Amino acid sequence: MNSKIVDHSKIPDLEHRNFRNDDFWKEIPGWSSVTRGEFADHMWQLKNSVRKVAQIKKLLGDTVSKEFIADLESGLHTTPMNIRITPYVFSLIDWKDPLNCPLRKQFLPVGSQVIPDHPMHMADSLSEDDDSPVPMLTHRYPDKVLFLPLTICPVYCLYCTRSRVIGGSTESVEKETYGANQKYWDDVFEYLMNSPKVEDVVISGGDSFMLNAKQISYIGENLLKIPHIRRIRYATKGIAIFPQKILTDDAWVKALSDVHKFGRSLGKQVVVHTHFSSPREITKWTQMAMDRLFSEGIIVRNQAVLQDGVNNHVDEMVLLTRQVGYLNIQPYYVYMHDMVPGCEHFRTTLREGVELEKAVRGTTAGFNTPTFVCDLPGGGGKRHVASYEYYDEENGISVWTAPYVKPGKSFTYFDPIHKLSPEAQARWADIPTREAMIIEAVKKAGY
Ligand SMILES: *Cc1c(COP(=O)(O)O)cnc(C)c1O
Ligand code: SF4
Image 1 (cartoon, rainbow, N blue to C red):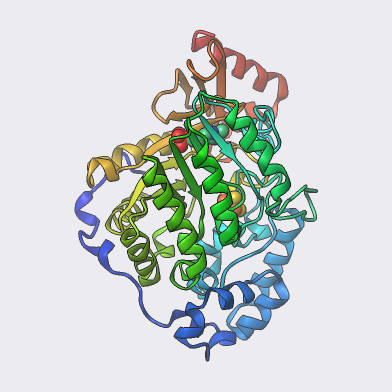
Image 2: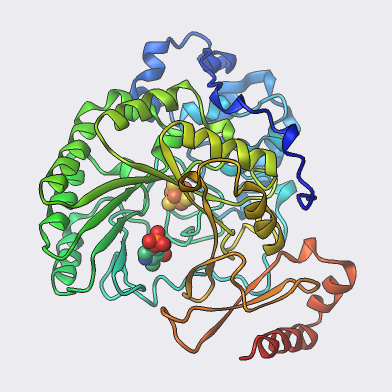
């Protein structure tokens, strides 16, 4: 990537206001006669979710090559994530060139793009399990917690940071996936009741779109009733990959809206955090869904994950930022990819993250500009990409601290090896040399 010199004149000024509104799903042979009304129905979307290669073959017929299908089948042997895609996303994939399509890359694994994991990768890269005082809860920061009430989602993202638990076992990973199991939630509420420092709860997972209306209310009301809790956020990729639910699942939207009103009556914030990664996910459907949430007064923020070939280009990132901003979604974070298994081909160097941050800042309102962060492996928490203590760019080793979260401790993050020079790659291949390089970098950082 060469974003060091960005020619902003090349970025079309008003492109971010054009939202696709054609019957794009009719290009999929299996859905050529599906009407707009059917496509808008959230039950139709769920029922027709794509989960098997046989289904993909049937839907696409001759429009997809045998080579691509074979590539997909080989990808399934190693991927940690099962296939699950809504018809909305499936039909937005560029089926004329699926290998290079940023949407296909996020949801359908192909064997030809898999590369070996980084030697320092970890299944629980962020040490969420170590910082867990009760099941389904991670309590790392003093005043905020992460609550995982379920581990299923309406789509499965190949880059998922929680691939160790989300979305059911695959050929390569055994998982203890759980649906919305209310039995354990009361223990979480009780723990929070007894944790007076906590003000902020992230309800993630898994995906809040898979909680039914009653569960949305149950969780929201129980959390808001705890006196010291001031802010809750429902996390869902749903707005990005399944806007039809916002448009036609009235019971769910009402439950969310009622929790929001209940929060407001107590002077507390209830917001939604979503997850758009590329402009290709955004259409007129997104705009209609956002208009509905906005009219309910619900604030939505976006968290994207930086992924090679998906959004690590300045034009894509600027367009995404402007587009979500235009839809009243506040860009909040762009994450460096976590060092989890099966994702090495997605990862970028820290330098790319730093350069993208520089290029995006200034293109739109400051409050609509995302902060680029690295969530430190080992549980140091999220840090601004340019706030490393030391960066050995040649060998792809950055050293970090987290003075408030883990005082006195240093953390390391590593660039993907395939993006380093051949000499550096050779150093990584030799274990003693690799270890010495890491120790040297930590020492240079003063640790
Ligand atoms: C990301 C995260 C939060 C929320 O952090 P914000 O920076 O406030 O978005 C809370 N707990 C854990 C464990 C997290 O990973
Ligand atoms: S929606 Fe979120 S939790 Fe679910 S697979 Fe995607 S990244 Fe993982």
